[in-house]
Length: 304
Ligand SMILES: O=P(O)(O)OC[C@H]1O[C@H](O)[C@H](O)[C@@H](O)[C@@H]1O
Image (cartoon, rainbow, N blue to C red; front, side, top):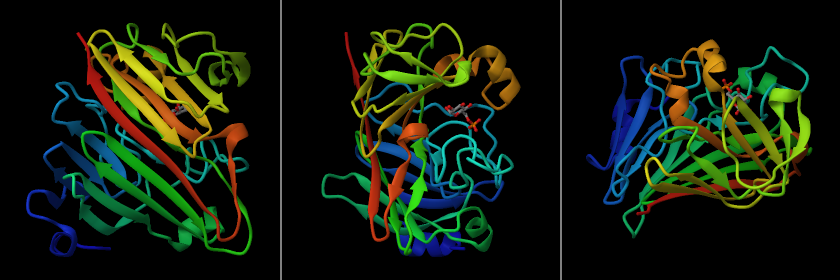
């Protein structure tokens, strides 16, 4: 594993790109540039915070009860779900949403772009143990571009000789003023699988509003979504490519209490997940030599 000293010597840039180890030994990179600041944990290549300087309130939601420990996914920010979404197709004992979100990633490069944005490129470290869960040859890279917008590219290259089937998601938690006042546009007239009702297939009419537990996989959806938050007078725009599913999730009170790390003071009320995914009907077959990229861009604007 790369030590903090090695990381700072090779990839650090003063206070602009700075690596440190938290009290639990999780290696984190802190990014500071003219547009934004961000924190990324190398466990899971997990963007925990991204804060554009023009945004007064947090854009990403991070639970105040998140556990920053080895082998456990951090509740909030952007967990990377890979190489399956939800439960494993045949073995329920395996980590839901795949192992990438709790595995170790390494830094392969850091770059300051001409416009001042910061680019952090990470690669999943293959281990024998992971090979048992995913017996395929591939290279997985996450590029995070920290600017006034946040961009992420999750790239999977099949380096083997046989095709494989991939499920994935950038499972982003967004901060909202109150789940009951926001609405999400961009999915009107599409179909979703309702996980709260055993994957019953339903039709979305109009914008999404929240009054109860919501856990939906919108299938065959590639369009941009907008989270409109009148409480903060803010719009968050979620643009994507290489993703045919959109997962929308809020657990509501009872489920949140069962989950346990979803925050004190009704933390769940202040979050919504809009996940750019390839899940259920939209899993992707990656042929030998093929490169598949799921890309997202998040931006915010305030209105009067
Ligand atoms: O608790 P986690 O494994 O992080 O999953 C959190 C949630 O992720 C997704 O949005 C799923 O659709 C939900 O069913 C799941 O509860």
